[in-house]
Amino acid sequence: MTQISHQTLTLSAEGLVCRRGGRLIFEGVGFRLGNGEALALTGRNGAGKSSLIAMLCGRLRPEAGTIRLEGLGETPLTEAAHLVGHRDGLKSALTATENLRFAQDLLGGAAATPEQALEAVGLPHVGALPVGYLSAGQRRRVALARLLVAARPLWLLDEPAAALDVNAQKMLVGLMQAHLAAGGAILAATHGPLGIDAARELRIGP
Amino acid sequence: MRRAFLAVLRRDLALAARAGGGGELALVFFLTVVVLIPFALGPDLNLLSRIGPAILWLGALLSTLIGLDRLFQADEEDGSLELMRASPLPLELAVFAKGVTHWLTTGLPLALAAPLLGLLVALPAEAILPLVASLIVGTPALSFIGASAAALTASLRRGGLILPVIVAPLTVPVLIFGVSAVDAARGGPLPAGTPLLILAAITLCAIVVGCIAAAAALRQSE
Image (cartoon, rainbow over all chains, first blue to last red; front, top):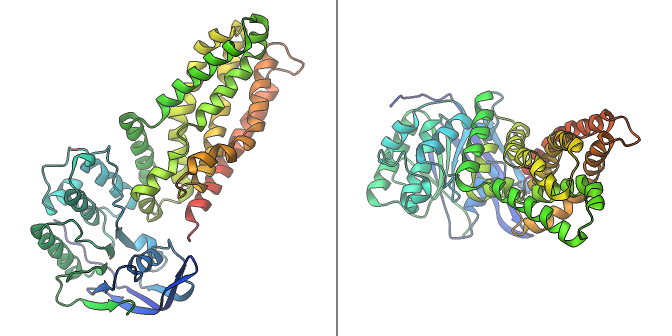
């Protein structure tokens, strides 16, 4: 697979406050993330891990605090980041290859072809199958393959290992290591260990 | 950017062809509405043929509303909308692509089926062509007015119920000029082309305003 090296970038957040439906979820959250760094986002259920990721994607407005992306010029954060969240962004009626090709065309910055990406996540045989026929773990792997079809320096992953079996979790660690080695950055909300030795931890809430 | 635009267009057409995007359902509903009305009115052919264009236009309007709620809601639920927000393609153009697909799979088939259903309401032969023309010119407005309402209700669980209430009042001008375009062609007081041109103007405005409004609604963060 083609190796891409990413531009220098720094994503920083300071004093983020999240309030949803009048309830304070978290406050005073800040971090700094640069090239080749991984940040594991931990915390109990409902601590606001997904809310923080939604804030970074621009889906949720922080009540206070700033999010800053430096080093990529005019590119906004939404166009520099890949998101794999709970909603996998796959259409059940389309095949895995069609889903990935759509993501590639939409996100731009072509990297691997859909076939290569499916190969990399260990699903070379499901390319022609409608995604609706796949199991939860296989769907998650197709969603992870999306990270490879378009090159973006920042990966925002929300529970990336959910529904994955042991081998697929190893595969995910391999993908993340390759991305970090290429100069990318990863922020992943997780309950288990991320599997990356150098990963720092950002704990939200008590 | 053209690649991303075509990708949205192509995907939605593929989805409509494969999983039943609501287009066929709209056609069946159109047929049902148009068949039911003569039963209610009774066997008065003169009356039917006089109000035939109105029946067909009303039927087309109601049929367009079917399935409109899924336009953005389906993408919101499975996370595809998140992908579109992350794309370099401006959301306005993504909405335009989805609106065009909606029209191609709903409005256009309705317009093409109208002559056939015209037989059921004793539509005179000279009114058939103006009717099809007015539907082809006017139904895109319904798709794009509907798109802005669909974007507003995308994250509401029962959005499908509130959507017709939002859309219907906004479609009044389309209905007025659509029906009067047919009446004018049958020898009404107006020159034949005038209502059709106004209808075309309404459609063009609806496309621009609909795309901008829908994109603004989709971009709105919590």
